[in-house]
Image 1: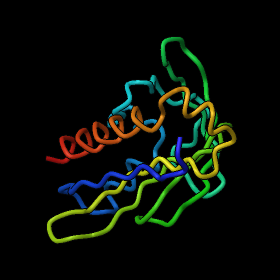
Image 2 (image 1 turned 30 degrees about the horizontal axis):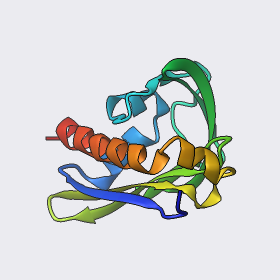
Image 3 (image 1 turned 135 degrees about the vertical axis):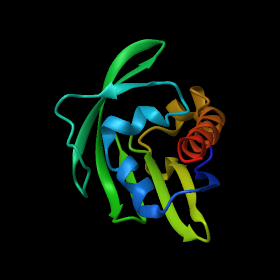
Image 4 (image 1 turned 90 degrees about the horizontal axis):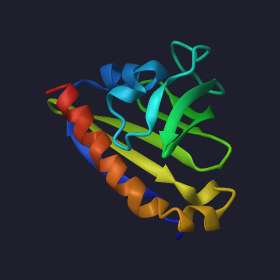
Length: 143
């Protein structure tokens, strides 16, 4: 696995603030999840994320599991990113454009604790496809 940030961008017909509210609410992440792994937010997840907030998610990738994420990037209506025990970051960058928002989603493995695990799990290819599907879902939600 290279230490290349996987990046995809799409136009969404909604203002950045509306999209940010969805991203800042972990209970809504399943609405756009392109990986199919999110089951739901843990009951103790905050209603709205902020810098340093932690939130647990019930996941399933073959078998059910739980993961705890920490928000490590947060700029209101512009950018939000979180990481879990694996160390890599999931990030969303929102840029206002005429008629909506340019939404960039990134999988950033540069801070991952194990590049080998990411390589063996084919994370680069899988995450690129999942990001594309997530952005498609986001577009459909606001179409």
